[in-house]
Length: 188
Image (cartoon, rainbow, N blue to C red):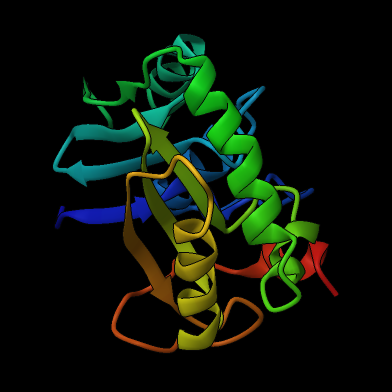
């Protein structure tokens, strides 16, 4: 089986969506039902043969364990390498997360993404450094999100890993998105 990368942060569990026959899509849907998975978490997995490789960053240790449990139910997965990083507990990072959320999702250009149950634009904070993960509809939205993050006092650096793709329809740009149906179903 060829290697596939699936970004888990884009998809919400939508009624009937887990009924797909593709293992990556099944795991994707199941993983998104993890309680407490939020805008400040980023979980990804890659299938290599019968091995699922989990990566990303989470704010709660139980999310790392839960992701592994859910991915273990993907048909054909025999081994799991869990490389998910549990971010250190930090009051200053928690304050930054709140300020970043307000600055990014409070901007008129970016607020459309706030209506999704699972936010397509993820905000990862570690020791004052910010990484933006996920997807946005346009280069403009990407630039606005990065600029808004950079204006928050206390942010040491901003790394932009956002992909530009049409979340409400067909793909754009060079990065593939597995499915956008859940986003479209939540955000009119």
